[in-house]
Image (cartoon, rainbow, N blue to C red):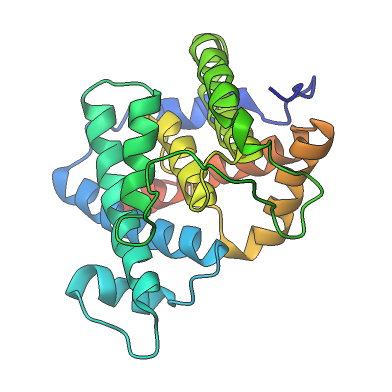
Length: 255
């Protein structure tokens, strides 16, 4: 695994205080939960896919997800990416509800959902080498993917009991991307894995805005090239703090 940077750039005290404040309002009314979830699924699906180059707009994504309408001029792949991402979020919710943690079977099932109907090798580790366009980091040779993922899961078993959930989520995301174990769909899967850890710990789902894509890619590359986690941790920490805002709006409380 990549050597972690020594000083995580996350204010854990602030994040724990925000979560404790939200916990005081739980359980939330069912209608509020449904409204928050619908908004999250739409925005999360749009931004995560847009980061990867999907050209569906936010409103087009809404129409595809809610009305099942095909958008003229958009590819079938783009439609499937939206539908699959919604299904993947539902899968994560089932995993959390069942009290399951991250393991290889869960990972492969998740990836299979992300690329269902898109890639023949969905849910299977890559068997060829890949490069990340524009990145300074080169993922490991395909021959080493299984070994690297075994190391990843070994690290995760230890880290899951000693790291703060937000740091764990960010590092799971980053280390998975560095390995790049699948031919395609690694970015979407990494962001879903991050949110699996946040959801398991009771934090809101975090959405990385497409507007932050350039910085996000730079931060991931800094980890792959130099083992510098601090910039990504700072970015994720800020986004976790911002993820509470929809709750405060519906609860009618000041931030």
